Length: 115
Image 1 (cartoon, helix red, strand yellow):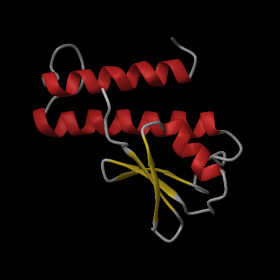
Image 2 (image 1 turned 45 degrees about the vertical axis):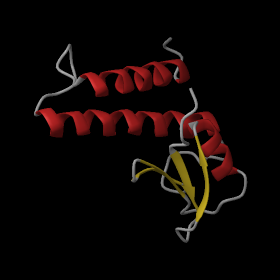
Image 3 (image 1 turned 90 degrees about the horizontal axis):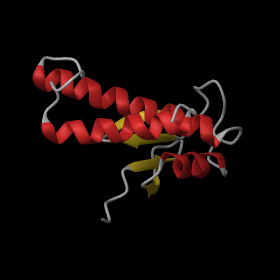
Image 4 (image 1 turned 90 degrees about the vertical axis):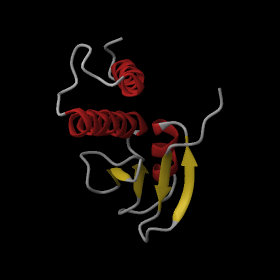
């Protein structure tokens, strides 16, 4: 099923550059020539700011994508906590959010070599 790109890339001036469906591609776009201060957003939240991290996206797109996916997962957990007043564990998640969090956890585990 086709979906809309969810990772939005902006240059250091806040000008929209591109959208992708994949954090790794967003990291490659940042590393391919965007300056320090460029950002990636998902659901309106900044999940990567070039120059503010341990490594630049140009040095390690895999590291950047892992950080981005981890932050997306954290944002989903926080959204769930705000909506339900509960932390994400067991079957306390709303059904619509459960699948999204499981998918992000799976992608994150694969990227860091746990799966």
